[in-house]
Length: 219
Image 1 (cartoon, rainbow, N blue to C red):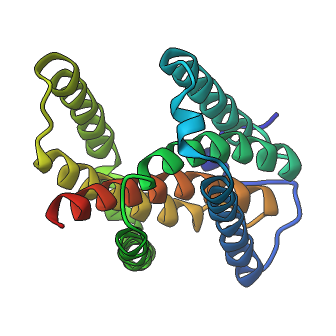
Image 2 (cartoon, rainbow, N blue to C red):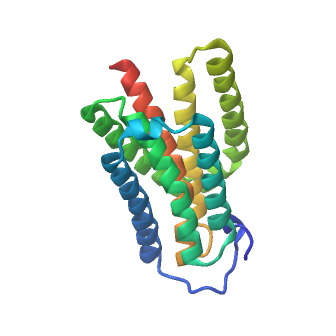
Image 3 (cartoon, rainbow, N blue to C red):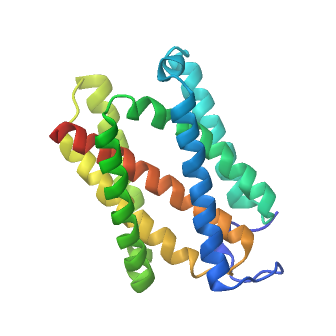
């Protein structure tokens, strides 16, 4: 085991070129999105919906936290990749449930917007890594507060205010800039590329789901 991936300032692993590093991040992200697509295409959302909600939630969080622990703590690419997949699969099941409520055209529009926003935030993350590092604490506090408010709204008052979706979109835009910026400040190894992709994957999927909800409400 090693220190957390984003705390690494030196390594004994093989350093790869910047191009190979970015390619590894891209391919890892594409793998995750591909697995999500396969889950959406091949699993009936009614099958997922029929699972006991508490059992599903326990399995979802257990798989995600285990996967996050693996890719954040390991310095071995294969272990990090396995951890990444423990995150990708439960996220894919959630995506399946969500996209089944919307038209194919709306989902495609959300994917396009998410892609453009992601690229834009990656550019900003490369140009202003210090800025995103400064706002990281504020992003985390804001996300925790939004989650609490949203849970209270839904389970206590039975309502959901659309402004929350916009706030979450802004938060995850910030996270994408932050995670991309710090991905380029750690040693460029294959393991770090996979770990960075895993962090970006969660940012991008959360951004996509909120954009889809916003578009669905507007349509």
